[in-house]
Image (tube, rainbow, N blue to C red; front, top):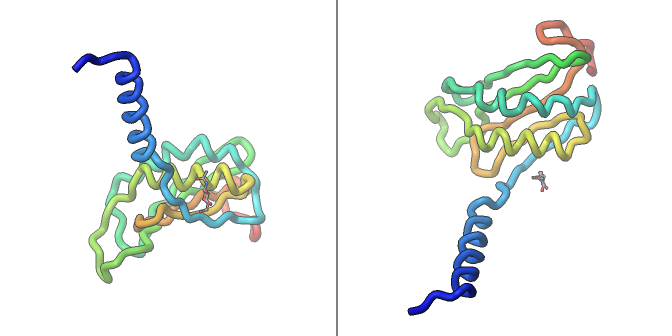
Length: 142
Ligand SMILES: *[C@@H]1O[C@H](CO)[C@@H](O)[C@H](O)[C@H]1NC(C)=O
């Protein structure tokens, strides 16, 4: 069998189309907040937050983290909410699901923040810009 340029090209195109199926965007289910502080700057903390939840989270519990910007704060959370098992073991959330969900929130919620998850994942992730700085009390409705 003699390989020619077209065969190599075909093989390359096939390899790429199979890759793009694997890399297909996950199904993100998310809900946007529709009022409050607008803060697309919170996007810069997504990777850090999603990589910071390295301890097991108990079912029904959450892990939270807060980041300051000069003018407001960004509250992040990972809540272990869904399981087929009534008493599932504590586990660590998926970094990839966290990043995909919070990127979706950033790109589609007009800066208000929101929450969501990737279909099949047990964790709900939240990104919420709020008035003030981390550790301060919040004004109601902020
Ligand atoms: C974000 O999530 C919404 C709601 O599930 C979905 O319709 C939309 O396609 C997602 N967008 C991106 C960029 O992932």
